[in-house]
Picture 1 (tube, helix red, strand yellow):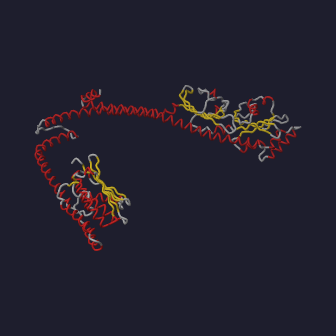
Picture 2: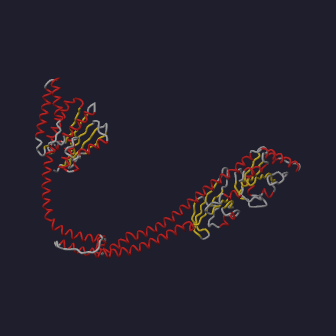
Picture 3: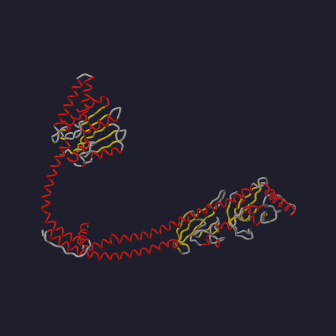
Length: 598
């Protein structure tokens, strides 16, 4: 199937390929992306709306909790009010006696009776105490319990347990303040009786929390009565009458998507349960999804329309350009075919100053140049190859002759001093080693030498330096016996060992250990020279690397390293050059590889 598709594409003309490519690569993906962007904007708008509504509900929940704390504190203080207990439970013989006691109670309080809480807290609309004392007179604060009141569900529930309830009173005869109220039992332990305290919240304070909300928001009590709403007309109604399409009275906390009055909407339900309360308040936020995504849809559709128009114009332009381009390319292709057949006198005449026109003129220049340069190129290539081989051979010989002789002078000086102070046996051994080393150096004219001879020179050099530095120099040579006959360029390891010894011993008082390791890695021979000298800082290491890669013959620093590096690169290539690693205070490691198949 893939072959058929490839054959079909290859058989299409260039202009058709450009148009199909434009449709597949540009137009269709842009339309898909555009549709995805519209959906993304819609989802983002909905997510932000839900997040905003949820945050707003949380803020309302916090503010409502703070507001409900006030009637809770008021009820707590009334429970501890012994004067109120005495006033409510005393049996009075006359109205005059009751009036005097009430006046005395008001005088006992700084602001006067139960009314003080309304004056102190703007959130409080009123405080009422219900108690079964027929000698009390209903003054809207102290209210004797009669039969109708005792049969009320809220009164009976309060007398049965000590939990706090939050209820909306909507009976003007029973309770003239139509607002959310705290209902709680008020025990009188000294009298072994109880009353019921009702603390009402101010409706304006409740509604003010919701006036600035962007969505329809309301608060309902346990019975489903709306106690506060952004739309004040909802206050006092039940959730069932509002017809939200679900039983919000029994609905648990969460976010719900449903139809509200025939329109897709989201409803966010949260619940606030205060301390000691057996019933909570529901906080409900409702918003229409169409109003949220309307602006996003409008912007997205306009953007898609503009994109579609631009794509169609671009398609027409691509078709025209492809038609003109393919015609001229076909003409140029015919000229190339004649050139490929050996016609060096073909001439291309294509109008225009664009790339195709320039290519046509360059084609003519190329044909003319080919005729003139064909023989010259062959000749110059032969000359260049011969010259390069000669230069390479000369450079190899010159670099092989650059041997730093400093160690010879140091060795001779050590021999002289030791001969003066000690016997002759050790000196004879050093002289023998030195003679062997010099004899090998004189044989440097050979192109390559066995690895075992190179290692003999290394070991001779290390023994001479051991004689010089004594215990300050330790060395170890590790070599794979299977590669001892492998031929390597002469003096390829000894200069690196010399560098490790000189810089290691001179820079470190307690001496240095030099390790030479040669091992076989598949088709490669890895040579590493490691010392535990002072090492180099990153800056110094970078200077050394730049120095050994320098091509100037007058460079005096690191002649041995540069000599080895350039010989390796010229002989085996860049990948077999020196790899230097060093850390200040830890030592230096130099590694290079040699191919075994050469």
